[in-house]
Amino acid sequence: MLLGTLSMLPPYIGPPLGLELNVPSNVEVVDHVVPGAVVVVCGMLSALLARRAGGAQLTAAALALTGLCFLGGLWQAATHAPLVLEGGTPEAPWGTVLFHSAAGPVIAALALWLTLRESADGSAGVSRPS
Image 1: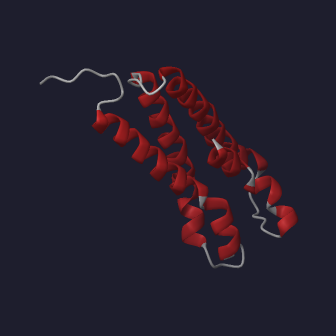
Image 2: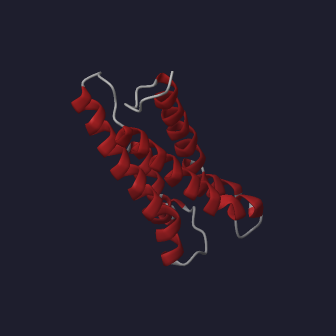
Image 3: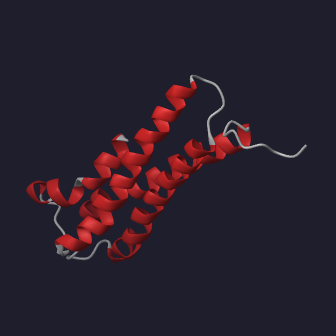
């Protein structure tokens, strides 16, 4: 949830730090706020489900929610791929590029690991044929 929140901040705290890109605000909303909000909401719901289960089997809903967190991180990583390819130019210095694009791959990797771990453990409450 913290990573989702942090992933929404670069367009808004970057300019005062000198890490600004020339990108329309509606693009920043689509690239940062929407996927970050998906990660925050799905992360909170998944944590609530896990807490309510109290160490018992997690539900398929919790597995789906961590999968949605993965998609939110993938969304951020994919929408920032062109920016990474432009990195090092005067319009996109490396510090700014890393500040804007680092959260997506981290969220995607962590959420994918959690999703696969839950699925492999059989802790998602999904019955498997023997």
